Image (cartoon, rainbow, N blue to C red):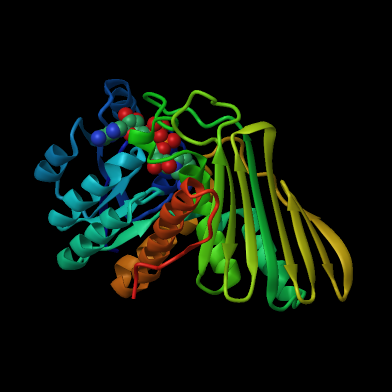
Length: 339
Ligand SMILES: NC(=O)c1ccc[n+]([C@@H]2O[C@H](COP(=O)([O-])OP(=O)(O)OC[C@H]3O[C@@H](n4cnc5c(N)ncnc54)[C@H](O)[C@@H]3O)[C@@H](O)[C@H]2O)c1
């Protein structure tokens, strides 16, 4: 069996609590190196992965190590430079979301990985959540038909803390607020559910909890697709953690409230209690699905193409949402940066 050699770049919360346990479940993958800018995280890496070599800088890691892939889980502002450095070294990349928050950067990254012939795959792990899988299965089983309306709400009592400093409220490190942090997940889920590309987006952003912050903690977006409309409500100003999705289709309706899914169809109404997702935002169980997608892309590089297009779409929606918010909620056309 071929053995894959990987390196973790950024050994913070999601790398340690979400990625590492899933990599350690893979028989044919060895994490041989770790890089983190923070000394206490490097000390933790030495403790958790005594066989791995630990670096402060990624360029040193790439120079000294012979790895097949890097798994990047640093704050968003690091991603573009690190993806491009890995690609130039001929190393495949799995990168946490948001891949980037700028379309120009996205295009540069896309060109860089294409000319290096390496895979660039973004972590779109909410697709593997119990809730999303159950919702897709119920839609199929109940034959609900074409979707007419989607509403996704993500309410959180504050933003998650970083392992080595709080970057989520710093626009230079995070690239934006909750729209970047949670909106990215909502954008790829919405587009997959809609089964078509978005045409336009309008958005309003505000600060309700972190009133002195330089990024938004609350966002409302309306996304127009050719055959349906979708609404997003994201906030870090909630009192408790709450996730709520409503899907209205021609043949019925689905409503998810945290881990309870209610379905109404021509065959009647029923509800399902799903296993509650683990506390926190690292979701180690969902990462197996991400690894399977990444493996498929490595086995047949073209398969990774869809994921890169999906990331491009998320960047386009993000950029246009912020532009709409600056222009008092004007609907802005979304141009997808992939052929
Ligand atoms: N997909 C998901 O569900 C999910 C969940 C949480 C976080 N994330 C994403 O994962 C990334 C990391 O988030 P986190 O919550 O783990 O943050 P974190 O702050 O806990 O971890 C980031 C780590 O990167 C290190 N770092 C910073 N700059 C570096 C550099 N230049 N080189 C090497 N290491 C560097 C920090 O020291 C820190 O240990 C973000 O992009 C975030 O959006 C995704």
